[in-house]
Length: 536
Image 1: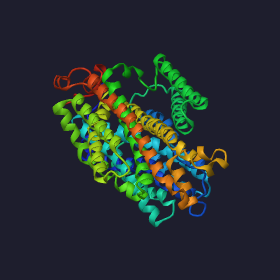
Image 2 (image 1 turned 180 degrees about the vertical axis):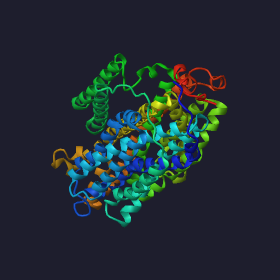
Image 3 (image 1 turned 90 degrees about the vertical axis):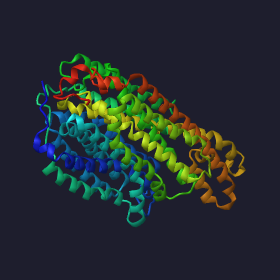
Image 4 (image 1 turned 180 degrees about the horizontal axis):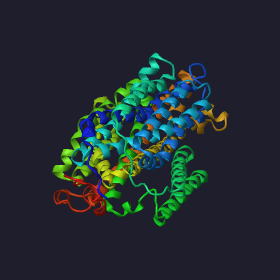
């Protein structure tokens, strides 16, 4: 079946539609990073809710779990019932949940509202990308996806800035309440500007595959999060991860044998498609892991406020804003292989610089590294995402978007959990001998273990005890920097793997020039679903 060309009336307002979609995307992604700045305030019994550390972990993880677990399902449903309808539903749910989060009276209420926010956000992200694939013709689609990808990076970077500004002037709930006017504006614009689209031949619903995908992804992501908290070798963490893997294996086996699969698993047989998906996951592994340890470095070691820490991330956002929309032109001239591999190499080199960062490294050097990383990501995410979306016909754009965003979310969760575990264990091994040398700490069992759990715990002890404990500050800072270097080695290894995958399996310039089957990660049988060639 040949997919019809974009309607002329829709084509005329395509860039306005993209603006609305980016606005919707910004508010959802922004929320995933803005909460981190408010956690300390929410824990305060006077200014916040008196939330415990466990409460705060769940307030963060509940959103991630609901978001990751439902991304694929919402993408598939959007193809069936209509993407505009699902986008409006997701934004409405997200707005109502934001209001509930802002005025939560207990940690339990906040956690429940955050789950609902994740449900709404999971409907928004894949739908925006699917609509882009149906609004833009192939010759402009890569540029539009570049702008979409840049918006994700910008939102992650400006989240801490926005949160810091709000907390300086308002109460903690303002970090959620700020979503409401953006949601109202976006919904109003969607009603008038965004066209609806869906798969004209959706086939039967997959009542087995969809629940399996939700259960498998949720269990796997929760296992990753839990492993980051309690350790990767704990039976509880390993058991949950194993359960997630088992459910996902069952999902794949079911999808292979059913005649109406929710996911066309045959797509993964094509090297360029699988390579593009892998690169998306790896680059977000590196990004989220880096922002995790860098935020601790800036605030705990350098003593910067959350607002200043957020401001220092601006070069990362600016570089993505400048270069994301330009990556499509480079792909046309040089091919996906060269652009993506070079971008991933730049990300890897920028990450590698942090292995040379000390407790007093000039900040301008960090800013250059952040700008370089943003430039690299701007030439990785758009080409890789465009390759994934080009691999599915327009009527199944929600499925392609769901795959892309699920891998992105899982990659980010893995980055925080794996690199966070390296950071924690390395810091503990370095600071424990120092703490053991303090006789006063031996009187209370478990004190050394608690204080060695993180640099913030050590610093909180120093602040509580006063000048007598201040000699611990320098060893704590040195131990954290050493631990950060080990985490950097892990992120560099992941980045190098991304470079290798791009070089081995993404299509080169010749494939693009001759329109070979599989160009841009597109299997030959799927390219026929487009009226015009996928790659110019």
